[in-house]
Image (tube, rainbow over all chains, first blue to last red; front, side):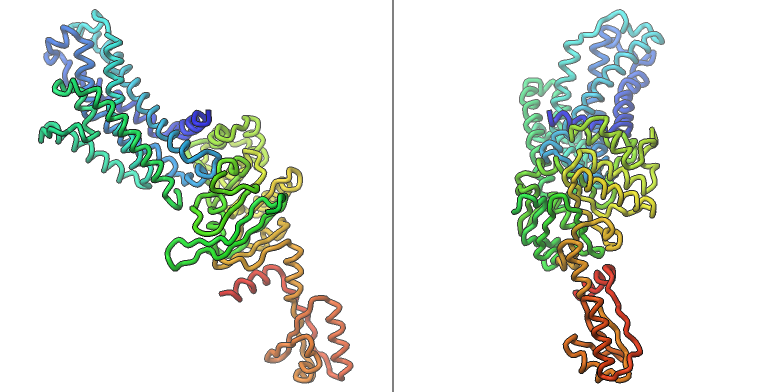
Length: 255
Length: 304
């Protein structure tokens, strides 16, 4: 009950902040890019016309897992703790009657709420933009086919679990930095490094680097490793959440 | 620890860096129902002491008990009964006054009605949808006080609460503090660097300077101490003879006069009689009572 009250309080703090706009705008980017880049007249592939929804969401997942979701997490994990630094409110938070554990968990849950909101917004935009575009280009056949919701939800659930580790690492970095630039710069480098390790250097131990998880869960060569990757992601999230807690507890002048 | 003691610090030491002593042997005692003024110039260690009492800083040496409970292991329980304002107002600029209070309403478990009550108490019940970032500093300070009052605290810890308030605001706040203390029995610990500002409302005073507690006691004890410090300036036809005559008063020779301590205004008449009886002409007999502000300056400057 206490943790729910702390979460409610955290969510209210972020009412009307850039975090909400960032959530909606980033989620709308992927379907917009897909429609502009790939679905215009001649670019509409045979696969898209044959099984439009499956192809549509597969293509969306590539953009989502490779770049948009990790980047969104980097930004959101920086923006959310910034609300305390920017308003000089850490001292008030830490003298409110809630344990330090509650404060850290409530803030981490707020990050998770924003990630889930992003995923919901992404799915809604993907569906609505596909339907809208179908009226412009009826050859795309979206309206003639139905969405495999169970497949879609499973895919989204895997994506969510795969980014848990990234969210905890970035949460820790965002929580301990008064600066907005530093956590974003670190996060960008960590995200870019994941892409380079997999696609440029083809590193065979990519699975030990948590920032690669959202990409690896999409690769056919890692299909059998997906359950382990998701478990590792959840495990890393626990470890880094614990580190964030211990770090905040050890800091002498909090805020 | 007496059952009526709300805050008790014992041999509190603190330093931010090696060699720099910020607090030295602070033994603070705030009794239940008292209005304790914690006075000291800027940088004397007031905020550090309050931060330790609220658990914002880790205890290095000494012990802290609040409501009879050891702070470290009972922090949430203690904070449940405590309202705080540490340094600047801690508010979310992008939210309204009501929303700022709602954030802590959830945590404190108070009602919506209480939010309206505290807003009315500090005169901010008509701010509507105005964002806090557009408030004046005085309005922000009042909202921060409303935030401290929200959980109906048994103890209020206010660090420099009059910062940014105009003279009317200061008077209103003083009345509000006195009212809360008198009618609701809220124990108050209020820090300030201006003695005159808190002198009008407190029942107890602690004076801190360079991390050391120079005085602690009731306002009456401070007045008594002040009277002991009162001086009488005298100029006669023969000041050297006057010094001999008034030896029991431990006179101090000044360039054109002499000065003696007195604790009671009747002593001034006795001194005058003694001088006249010894056939000295008295040109000046001026009692110079030490007001609290002067006493504060004397206390702190004698230590520097």
